[in-house]
Image 1 (cartoon, rainbow, N blue to C red):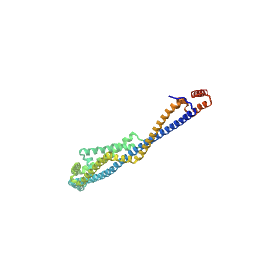
Image 2 (cartoon, rainbow, N blue to C red):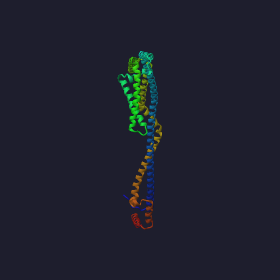
Image 3 (cartoon, helix red, strand yellow):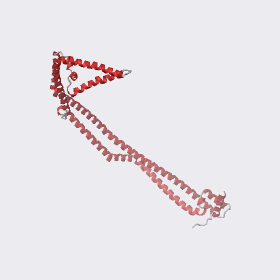
Image 4 (cartoon, one colour):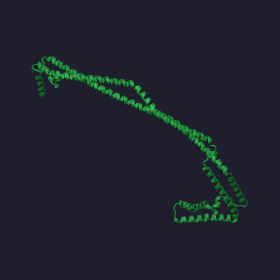
Length: 365
């Protein structure tokens, strides 16, 4: 129970001291709160930086491992590519040699037929151009291929050439095209008939014999192409002595597969073991600093707790001993001095009266 105040000097001295102590405690509380928040923020940022550093380091190490294996894999692939190219080159050379060997008889026969035809035409004084395949295509047409060549020749001579000449004329008229066609028919047609008459009428028997030789040569040529096509399609490479290339390719493919497995195992080991070791090493290097910051945070929290406990105790004590008499709004040094002044000057007989007068003055002021 509150006791009447008789010693005003001691009361106000104690009240002022309580106000100063409470103010100091509040300032200490505010300072420690800021200090605690600052340490917490610094600790949080430090942990974030450690986590980021750990993540970057782990990612970098994993990338380095992958790159080292990828570099070796690229080298092996390049070697494999070169060996395969060499094998293909050797195979192509073998195919060429095989084609030459298997068509040698036909090629020789065709060469003999060519010489036979040349000799025959020379003996019969037949013009040399009559021994060409194109001549026989134009004058002794046989088969789909020669018919196609003949039609193409007609298309060029009587469509493309006249149209081309017509388009080159600066001021074209329709009659120009008719003139061009007439001239070409006379020139080309006349030349065709003239050559035919001068050769076929004079050397028909020889030309027919030449046709037979030409047919034989063309048949042999088809056989040569068929043999070459069959050889190229043949998948049996045992005839080309490619075993050394196949062995090297098999070894390189095995090395590549092994590199792929090693890379996978290395990355798996890194993910399951090495990554944890790296993280532990990084954490260990920062552990003293983190411990220091955590200890500092713990100490600050303890001091803050002590200050808050003391502030609570002082507030309750001040409330019981002083606030009860002067009111909480007057628990400042300035207002306590004003209340004390009213009492000392005799303007009030007790604290309650002094507080009431101070309140009235505040309203009037």
